[in-house]
Amino acid sequence: MNVYAAPVRDLRFVLEELLAHRSLSLPGFEEATPDLVEAVLEEAAKLAGDVWGPLNATGDRQGAKRHVNGSVTTPEGFAAAYQSYVDGGWNGIGVSEALGGQNLPEVVASAVQEMLHGANMALGLCPMLTAGAIEALAHHGSDTLKAIYLPKLVEGTWTGTMNLTESQAGSDLSQVRTRAVPENDHYLISGQKIYITWGEHDAAENIIHLVLARKPDAPEGNKGISLFLVPKFLVNEDGSLGERNDVTCASIEHKMGIHGSPTCTLSFGENGGAIGYLVGEEGRGLNHMFTMMNEARHKVGIQGIGVAERACQHAFAYALERRQGRAPKTRGGAECSISDHLDVRRMLLSMRSRTDALRALALYCAAELDTARHAESGDARQTAQARADILIPVIKSFSTDQAVDIASMGIQVHGGMGYVEETGAAQLLRDARIAPIYEGTNGIQALDLAGRKLQRDNGEALTALLYDVAATVEQLNADAALKALGSGLAAGLDDLKAAQAIVLEQGTDPDTGADAVQAYATPFLNLAGHVLCAWQMGQAALSAQAAIQSGSNDPFYTAKMRSAEFVINQWLPVGRAQRAVIEAGMQCLSEFEVY
Image (cartoon, rainbow, N blue to C red; front, side, top):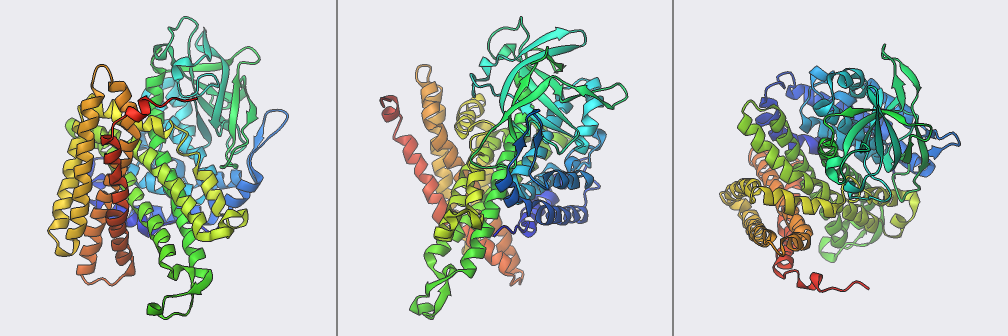
């Protein structure tokens, strides 16, 4: 089964409140009416389901191919599908009108991204990286660079890449060796970058590489790194494409999944030096690149949710059609589909409810990004950005870890048929497995949360967020039918507060603080992810219950209630165990001998 139906109604359910009370009330979004948003979602669903989705399996089988001259061809249909995306103006939906975009809220752009990644993760990576390049260039590029490169990037006529990793450096970017030698109004870039997503392809007429490199006289470490724009084809003064720049695809990786996405090793300067242009300030390249990386990390979380949604659809369809065994006597005892067996239902409800929860949290974060960028008050922008900074490592790490587990559970629902490639369930697990690794491994995300983000304000931003969780507890407790959910969420909230106190206290110890953060970071992030997702499903329960009490007998709302009950009553307790992990201390880790 390779059919994909975009989850428009599920997305709309989450978006309704976020748009009505948050993003659409911000300055600049006056024309983004609910009717327009609805039309955008419906059209995006057609693109995802009818154009991108059918290419998912064929792209996996064919993969990207590198040729002798270093050029790369994408799987059959990918270039045309990407062109359909460009022709529809989708690349600029979340970009401001001033830059040539459609100026829709980030929360709407994120919903569209989920559909596209669910339809075809390998193809979705191309515009995802371009969006990050737009963000970095818009914030840090000179007026000249913006005038030349942004219009085509916003259109999607040109695509963007992010060039950080080198074979000897890995995640330690302070070890970057790529060189940038000044020459007239530009630099000559030489070196090699690995794992460059969509680094070479045939889907767009030009590729704009953002490259970390250091000048010959630059100091060692992070402060010596600058950011450079290196186009595949040089651009003439009239905007037309000129000669090929000195950047070539040396190889493409043979990967576990996302075969349709060309992951390249790029060589710069094999014939004298690739022409590049400084972006922003010298020595602040890593700071500037984080603008792009922050955007990408949120979208990688969205990507994981898209794949989780498709895994749910696969599993539900198979469970309904696969007939095996008999229902219990209490339910008739007749031959039944496997969806009638409660253990299978446990897996299906676990997959569905977790996907619902992850989606709600990621879109909530997108709404915070809208506020951070567009609120009239400087204080409101600052508060929203601090909250988004806390949420992004959770969205990236927790969503992608859960997506892997959800895709794996989807295989389990299929049984033996899930382990063979023909059903398509195995591809989803193979594709999803990269997401916890790239854009900063999930361990790095946990360190970012428990170390940099939590310690820099002594937990103030997270504490403010937890006040909102407590408010949801009060709302649930006020409704007799939802009080059990309120109690469950309150218990998780208490656990997270206790864990936060431990991480803050031990993480600031002058002697052992660094080790404490290392030891507690991953369990702390997992606990935070469980509690924050449960909070969002508490909000979903309130909305669904309101609809039911208003007289609706729509099974959609009943299903949301079951999702909320599962998340808070059966899944949150698993996450709450992370408090005990943190309270157990780090002695076993510090004394463990690796041999």
